[in-house]
Image 1 (cartoon, helix red, strand yellow):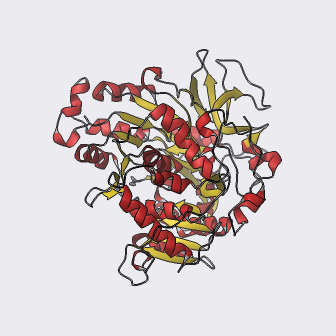
Image 2 (cartoon, rainbow, N blue to C red):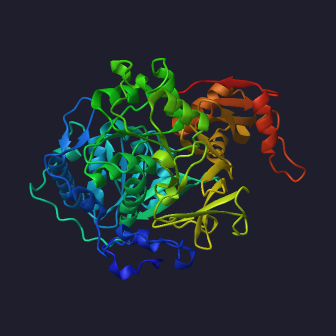
Image 3 (cartoon, helix red, strand yellow):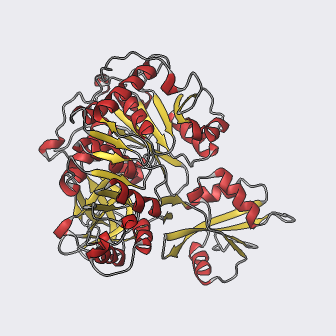
Length: 561
């Protein structure tokens, strides 16, 4: 079942910027709504749907030290925030609202309030720097921001023209949480199912961010496909994980999926492997979302021993409450899957998703898991492997992964739409093999994206940051294989004649320009970069040199990422 692009007259948006900047209809992917649960009504507000079901007294949000928010309390707080947004702050349906802060119940409540008020959520990472924030706000024409008071400095430093920043969590009388609001329910804006609900930014191989626009029905479709059919959560589940809400992996796994199931979620500001292990034991977490890197790190923390008995080995490492563990963000090696299974008795649910498609579209669970493969298309999705011309290749032969389903890529006013959507299929940029039994096996990224500890890092974006340093005349960035992280970022720079900058100065400069996880672990100073006779950069020579340590003066550091 294929549904055409939306008709603008049905939109509830007063500010029509997002709909006006959707790709033209002939560049949309084919959308499939084959499952009965995917046939949504024309009028749909996904925030209202997510909040509508559970009894008021059931737990919704948990934190390590604070009180539990019930669904009744969550609904009341979201309604209060929505009143403030549309009253004192003047937000109208269709406005883009930037959300920034660590993963807390208030950030999640702000996201729900923005959508319930008919506005469009643009959730960014608390780590992102002024240059990055300014670019995203300019692209999406953001004029309103809700920001945790602890994360406001870089947003203020971005000096974004016309941006109204409202902080929350502080002591100021105009703090978002202190503003007066009617103590009555907020009637959700009657948005169309195909009104834009969120803009999620990702970095492509050019380094310029791409704004991925997703609709109200898209948000529910991720829960009604992967979560409903593969994850299969229960109302008494407690969700937790490491990805922030600024990543669609975290948005689905820590907010949309538990709310859709009437379950609760433990929201952690610090969610490294050690913190996750402690949180699982203390809060009886049953559903976990994180990257393969974190699973490997948690294995190193667990007590020794063989078999599932380790789940009860010590109070600090008690994993007996876990029943579902989801791995995504980077390829899951078969060795990691087997080690986790041997040590815990739990079968990791592998999956591949994309910001362009909002969440996971290939996966498998329980007895259907084949270690070393990603899985099969999630119910509601279709996938194939094709060549550069779009022709499907035989099983066993590598090619480009192409998928289609109820959610598709819609870039915000970006010519790269034609690269991602080809003949109605979303071409993800991953090289895959389809095995004869129908399982899909990951081979590699088809572009220069570096995947490090679950983060997607565009090499050219890091290069551009280096080139903004006055002493750098040339720069190149690659990913070097790393057992713990998958890859680490390695940068090569050529300095101007007479420059006094060293690698430490360059690293400090890049750290001020980009989020920490994008910063090079190693910087190599060269007299020149290897190029062909026509001037093209020979990245393969840089990769070879980085792996062997040849021809390099390097400075290596360990950052917390």
